Image 1 (tube, rainbow, N blue to C red):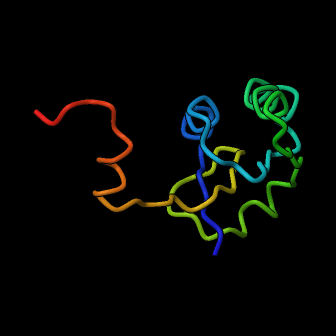
Image 2: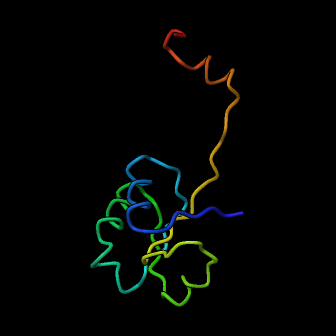
Length: 93
């Protein structure tokens, strides 16, 4: 099952944080204008960017407006508390 991040700010922050992103769909009419910063950031990280018709993007069942950008992301991997504690370098308070 695919997971999505939608919206300009959400996708931009995911790119900045180093989140694992498989590919990004960008509205064809906004690739070189309104979303050029996201496209540039994605390409600099080697992430595939696909210009996509808005009509096709609207087919995704999203709970919020996509604002011309949809990022396909990997599911978050959870760790057990014991694993997290072993990896930490801080002493327990």
